[in-house]
Image (cartoon, rainbow over all chains, first blue to last red; front, side):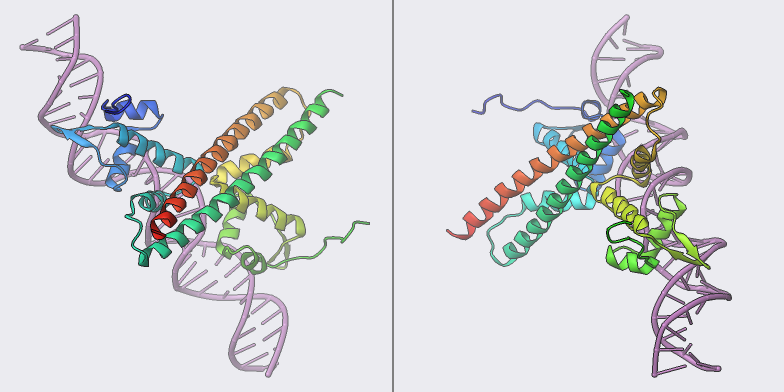
Length: 128
Length: 128
DNA sequence: CATAACCTTTACGTTAACGTAAAGGTTATA
DNA sequence: TATAACCTTTACGTTAACGTAAAGGTTATG
């Protein structure tokens, strides 16, 4: 029914290796309630969705968010949105995150520009 | 000789208030060797350059860098670049940072796009 | 000149995000 | 069937980045 029928599964070290992290870290995210794999006996079994979730977590980390913030962000998606009362609150939270992210993007661009300047100066220095 | 002759000075709490941080944090950055104010008696006195430096530190934090990384970045600028042997190493480091920053920018843009989608879905939900 | 509102150093406390064993089950394979 | 190569839980350790007193000097002001 689906295209590739994403029913492939992964072991914890499969994911740790693929995404260059550790099994301990992944288990830590689970303790934290960020990812909930199935079990086959005692072993953890990760679905394609679990894998995607881990990618989300790691992307959040790269951006500089804490696990608590990442959880908030993930919850935004899970939220059964449409119940109007809390929806306003939800939207304001989303708006706040958006502003933070835009600020970060600006910060990064500033730094990138400065780095380019620096590189220029250094290579000028070299060719004299 | 200079335009506005930036000789204005600031107390530690001036800066803490202006940039919405704490005096403790600023002193911490000093312990860490990131900022070195003058003294007037026992009191710390911050110059315009010191102020700028603090802004740099805080921007680094917003981007998600650790103090160690921020120190590295700041050192890139202070470096008496042009000595050829270490210059290559310096340039490679800069290049690495650049890649990290670009990755971060991508991550942020991905997240911003997803947030926009989410907002759309929520407001569609509302107007039905 | 007293008292508030600053500032100082010293130092122990806290939280997050794992690292690092330890002690032991499970599964593939030679 | 015996090891290797996985996996499990439990639990204590570590590092970063400050927070939070404590105990006490300094400076502005009514």
